[in-house]
Image 1 (spheres, helix red, strand yellow):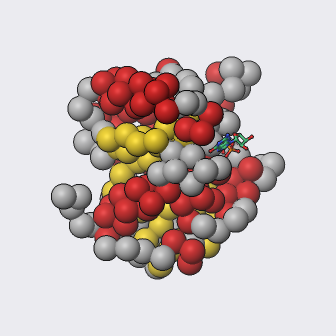
Image 2 (cartoon, helix red, strand yellow):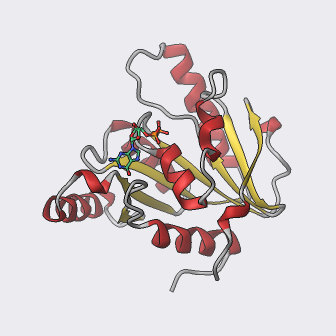
Length: 199
Ligand code: GDP
């Protein structure tokens, strides 16, 4: 099934699970280290320019930012992570919120993990993948900024990342700049959001 992602709109930001919309329908979460290309991916996949700008608005970078396609289908942008300077207390708070979101959210159908193709499977990525594996939550990796590498190097990163996932999750090349992989990502999201199994 195809979905028209251009209808995606910002709905709300939440500092805690209680601030999220009712836990019904289906939603897909996006995670990634800061600067991995998560906002650009959200904009490219939905075709709504500037959609994820809200996730970069000062004061909103530590929140769960919720976008809706329809009343029953949502995309949730998880706070970026990976700046070494973040104080320990904030790091713990972040882990608690994201952990309880991933673990408790009934409508969560899957996790899109955005990784810069030049630096995939960093510590934070591995933590997220480990958590998703424990929770049996489907994972799909976007190797972003694929335009930054030549074909051979991109294919190698794809193969290495596939191996690194050890069977938990799927992975694809993606570039918000060239549009590579946008169609593939849209199809996967449509499967998850409609509940149709991927063949
Ligand atoms: P976020 O912090 O994960 O939301 O990352 P952004 O989407 O803001 O992107 C971080 C930086 O990477 C920006 O300078 C983007 O222009 C750049 N970037 C994002 N996607 C691509 C891409 O597909 N190709 C290239 N070459 N650069 C990209």
